[in-house]
Amino acid sequence: MELWILIGAIVVLIGLGIYRYFKAKKIMTTLTEDEFRQGYRKAQLIDVREPKEFEGGHILGARNIPMSQLRNRLVEIRKDKPVYLYCQSGARSTRAAMQLHKKGYNQLYMLQGGFKKWTGKIKTKK
Image 1 (cartoon, rainbow, N blue to C red):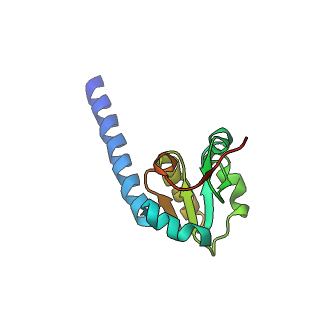
Image 2 (image 1 turned 45 degrees about the vertical axis):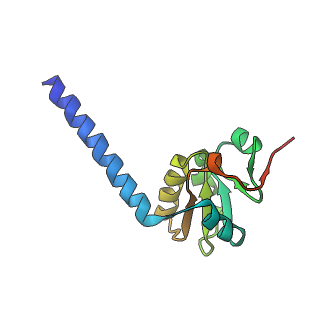
Image 3 (image 1 turned 90 degrees about the horizontal axis):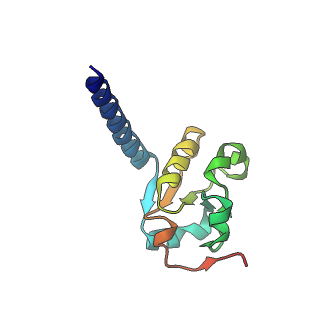
């Protein structure tokens, strides 16, 4: 009996993961570094990593709005301009995009592979 409950829970988690994956693909566009570079200067570039990660190095021109603070800082993000998101690898950007989409943001873009794959200019705090 307990085994069936465990199997059922695993199936539900896998199903939820698949649902979120396809929902994320529908609401945002994942861009290669070149595509990201072409558009981010005309958009709102937001780093959703935590402040310590941001201070360790971030894309030049990015604003730090950590995923943990996003809900309280939505007033800082305009709905009428594209939003370019990135985090370390892509997981938090996906969660941020889903949260923004629920609040009416439609022009959502994410950096494929996140900051760890970025080869462009970066800025660090001394």
